[in-house]
Amino acid sequence: MATDNCHDVLQQQLNALGISDYQPAYDLKDDLGLDSLSLIQLVMGLSQSLQIEIASHEIIPAHFGTIAQLEAFLKQKTEDH
Image (cartoon, rainbow, N blue to C red):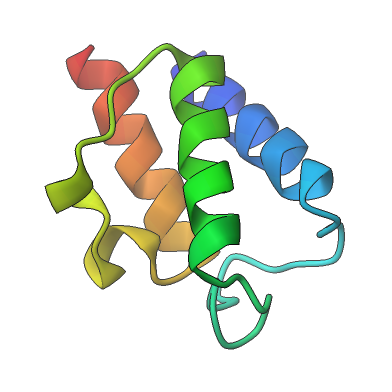
C-alpha cells in the first residue's frame, strides 16, 4: 500500500511542477530540469503529502538523483515512519 501511495504522491507532485512525461531512470536535474527552487518545492510537497520529515542532510544525489532513487527513498521513509 505504501508503495502505491508513494508513487501516486510523487506523480502528483511532479505534475504540480509541470512535469508529466518521465521515466524511472530520468535524472531530476539533467533530464527534468529541476533547479534548486523546484527541488525545495518538491521536497515540501512530498513531506506534506506523505506526512514525513525530510531532513536537509537527506537531500543528496543518492536520494534525489533519479525518479527511481527518489521513489525508493520515499518508500523507505514511509516504512520507517
